[in-house]
Image (cartoon, rainbow, N blue to C red; front, side, top):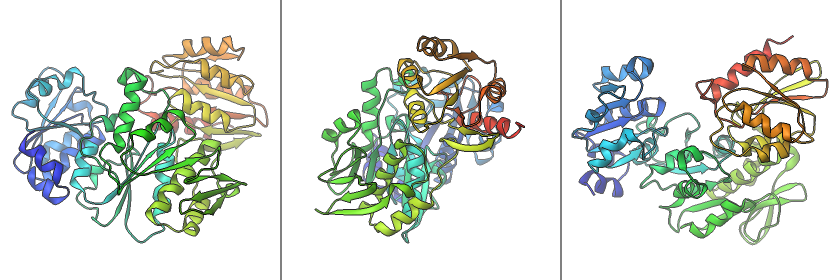
Length: 468
């Protein structure tokens, strides 16, 4: 272990940042999180090299602007090895696989490799609530942020939700509360990350093209509470088999939540209410009728948020008020408009089969489903089974449209292949009848056709708004 890493295991905040002064640090991946990490490192006085497989000219203004801060930029694969010469530390963006060829020179030199999440957490001193899971992370993170805003301490909502921790590490006060969405990619490169509250919502197969096996994916998720101790808290879903099994691996006391059963200790549903039994007696928190969000999965998200808030000390009355006001986040079963009796919903964040299953289960209406994209090696049988009886027509786009279509057709679901999202929206407008729901929930990643799921969802919303 280098002296830099020894300092990192015992210090956070300004002391850790001071330890970076004069050190050579390479940042790999210069999208949003990489840019934030490089800026933070330069402010701390580190000698920073930024590297990306894309040419610098293709990375955009923010990445190119790092040169003005004194960051040495290396773009493309031709000179990649030189980025690691003399490096004391490597900071990777979530999209960079730790076992990939890009990091081979750093691994060969045994240079410490951490992620932007780890760097941002080390640079801050505030208590952190971290949320992970295959589905529901962003909605639950935003909801917890809204609930914790009811108490007087400053609250920062950041992480995988779209705001890198490193972007706020210098300005956010030590007495504040950080609510951080964390992905399996971010957790892979976490070393000392220790949230006070660690939430695992659910775990179903996803990102197997990156992790290789479901077991490896579960192990990555479990890193969220690897460094916790007896004064911390783990919030886990008692209804999800893979998540329930993680209870044996938690280092901190567990607060369970359940939509399906009463719990001896935890937060659950009883008689149409969210209730909690944490101190030996049952306390009513919020009626289900006050939850605006559609779908049973969002009841689970509310249960998790309630458990976090109660453990943090927010009153039941304040929790109830925040839940009743919460209207969700973009691209998660987001209502777009009604046109001639047809409701249009944007669930572009449905980037895997399990997420799309939850979206389908949220509606009792007949569904015209727009799906497809980059499938990430998933099995499509569960999607076909869930679509039977719910989906009147599937309009498929993208790289894996053929394989998805074969599975749906085998379940006797009408399938139409569309060359673009615009063609799919136009077709949906033609086939949907009053009372139907047109749902974009792709069950796939977006990168074959769009920059990201936000781009895909924004395009969908614009196309829908133009319909007449």
